[in-house]
Image (cartoon, rainbow, N blue to C red; front, side):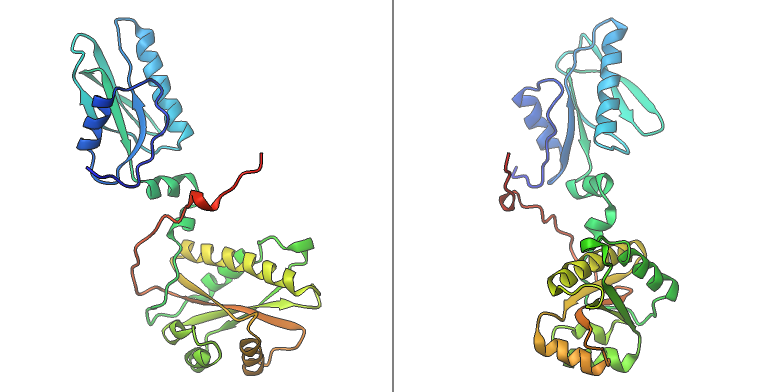
Length: 281
């Protein structure tokens, strides 16, 4: 069976190829192997203690909420093996007969959502929105998150213009041709760079980008969808936004973020690509 998305954590003890092949056959496509326990349990209690310790340490190291036993190979009937179901709050042990217990974890994206901020893996660019206004309290939370971002020399050079005017949102596509989603979005946040706080435009860009990313992640936490559209460095778009919204020369329009309750479901993707990484050791 062809398999994709399989992550294998180094086994604590070795497992033979036949056993592992049987496990792959039992698991559904794309299942993620989290831990393989291959221990002979004798009559001594310390063997059982080792097995429990291994499972508990594995659960702690991998931030596991729950382990589920998937498959037991019964090739060593003489020695009882205790299968363990580990939760954060307790451990349950099930006596059985076997040689190898192979434990399956949920798929990779679900596991990463537990190991890191779930919002990082839930965030997507949403281009269709419900006809439902965004609460002012939630908009404030987005802006609070944005202002917690790092900035070069701590200038905090970002400035924000919140747009909820329906006519302005509908006509924004005339200022930036890739903002068609604004026709359904109930809110847009224009991110500006204050040149009186930071004279170097390059720093204005990176500061604004950090603030926008924080905003996008917090939007997921608030149950909102977003889509980030660039304004700068396109000179025509900068001029168009500056004129329409009467933006002063000492403020640079950098980007605009559509905000609203999403009205589309998109397939999530794991974008990790080892080919894009280099190490200098």
